[in-house]
Length: 203
Image (tube, rainbow, N blue to C red; front, top):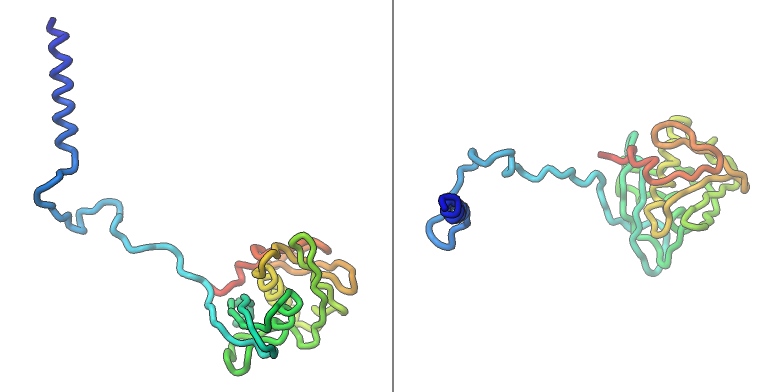
């Protein structure tokens, strides 16, 4: 009989405890001092800020109507994203031509393209892979210490266009290798991606 009487008592005690923890429906609200908030829960937002600058400029290429596309140009030893307005309708060949043309002068004197004006290439796309097929060995006309940035310009820009995930390079239809962002060389015909060069983007 004693055991049977203990059960209701325990239930009542549990209900009392739960009731004391519940959020009150009315009454005064006590404000907690910011010094008493644990674990830094009141700290400001710590998410990383945007790492690139977006500037809308009109490409020097002529056209009646324009649309926007993301390009990567060289600023010192890194790359910066610039949003250009280029002639519409556009395709990868038009994007490549705008990349070669560079920025309107003197819009950004520090930001430039390392790609020579006589850089001629045909851009073919198959299954999300863009192949940059040049008519001659264009890397020879670029300083050795700038070749990685020049390739990064092409890869980052092309893979920023819809439907393009990888880029390959060839000269006269023959696959070649190119430097990746970290300095190693991708083998001939090996596709490279945005991630292979993102460490070169200005922080």
